[in-house]
Length: 217
Length: 267
Image 1 (cartoon, each protein chain N blue to C red):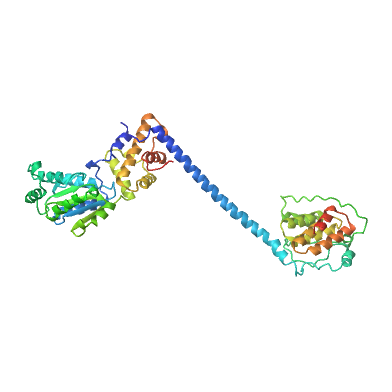
Image 2: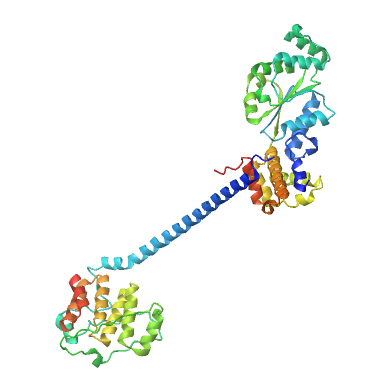
């Protein structure tokens, strides 16, 4: 003879089984929540380190990559972004940089034109290698600015500066290159350089975005 | 009657001596007890163990099966007063004692004439319930070599009683019966079923099932038997009512058995 009626016993068993399953499910959820939290905080702290470290050095950093823009006249003469010394690159070796032609470098001082709005769409499916190969093939402003944007998005500000300069050489009138340049310089702790660059660009060109950025600095 | 109904009958909680199982702890305790009884020089033997380990079974077994020792009387419980106790013992000698002639000293002297040199043994079960008066009487009878006493008691209470002045300074023997090992539980189930031609039922048990049983029984013999009996009752009902889901030995039916016994709290 059982102490409980059979059906009652089955009911009690099911109750126990459901309770046990809930407990196991809770343990799994808690486990994955902890893993997720650790992953999130780890990622956050590692990404925050790069710009913060650079900003702390903003006072006395001398550029090895770029020569500082000494005077406005010097910059105005070239009417382009300040020249840079050849930086070390991490690009694939088979890709060579093209040196811009003089005609490409010069841009006539003309009446301010509305910049052509250039919608940058760096496809998420394109990786860096694809962009660099594309630039090697076409050597265009478009591919250069995509690379600059890629580096900016991935917080590689030094490379973003370099490629923004490359893009501006291809088409100095385009504001985007100057904007990426200025934002990268700010991230690297060189706000003054950023302001000067934007001011120079806006002297000869019109861009609301560039103006807003300069106003915010 | 289906196989499970037959199997259920094998695990009743009784003193059926056909259910004898030669676990290591039981065999060792049995040997020590028989040796102490045969030696006639140990007036007091304390047989200790947790409830359900087989103390009462051992006393029953020795009383009924071991012819080389003399058990005068087996008290299954200590619920007697001094007078009743002495009258019972005196009646063993064959003498009829009248109620109004009772005097303890006279009764003790009568017992002395008939019983001596610890030739006969008295078993008292559940001895942890003995009163001080009873303990004193036992001391007198054992000190005078009239009877050897085997007191079966729970381990915990036994340790406390042993510290009493009545026993501390006297020669005694302590015998312990412990719980079964996991392998012994498995062997017990197998042997019990096979010896009654239930090999098909025995083959249903897997090592994981035995582990489950030992977990909830804590290797206690009585609890193990209860779990098995309840399990087979569940399987018997399921077979009879054609509840196919519950006709096998598995974690479900084992869990139902321990729930029914109150060994697992569902709330």
